[in-house]
Length: 299
Image (cartoon, rainbow, N blue to C red; front, side, top):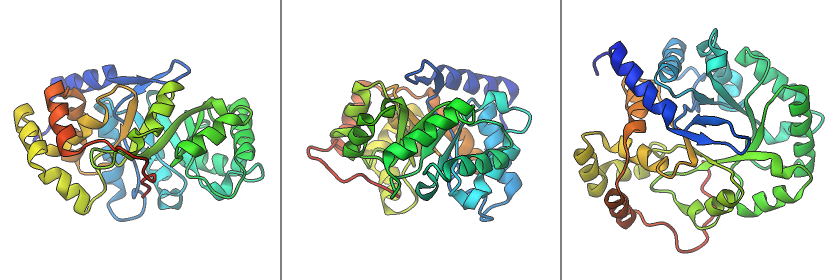
């Protein structure tokens, strides 16, 4: 893929700056962000990972999601390098291990993440998944971090509807700003009840692996005849149609991960794709939403 010129960069950035999701506190964040799962593990050159994130930021994908689990802190170090000198341009999300989410450990875990990220606060801090620590204790820890200014908001990840209902019933549980779950065209189980539950409470969803993780399912999506037909109509790649589908509703934040420069650009350009009702109907026919409750997909 050829290099983008300044005008092209500005055009893509402008589109992504306008394609936003509004959080319950009124903050607007990009509908398209960047994920970092598997970064910082030595699988690819660190400079390449850093440069990919920098390019994504330049193209308007200024929300970056990471976690202390990713590379056991390695991904946070990569993010810290990428946002050095431009921290104020980035909406930074990190996640705490369940075993670190209790009162005794959450402050230390958060502080360690902040050190690796090279910042004094996280814009959003998530419980990575539900573990053995009582939810009310995690909420108390999150609220304390908010009061101290270490985090500005908190949320959860990999919570199904029953988990969200339980969380919501605890004191300050309604301060949960988002739930990050697996969601893409081939994994629509949350549309049976979880997505509507969150919408009723003005709680946007964060979708990880919005183009599906590598494997059989991803190949099925990318090779699907309907997806490919629609991609040709829009003069884009199938993966861009799948990504555009994930943010079609205006209340879902997608965080695709990319390291190769061309993949970052493809992801960023997906922000300009508006699928027509006819497009959506055809995709619905190929990948229908669920008619019954399904177990939450988790990777």
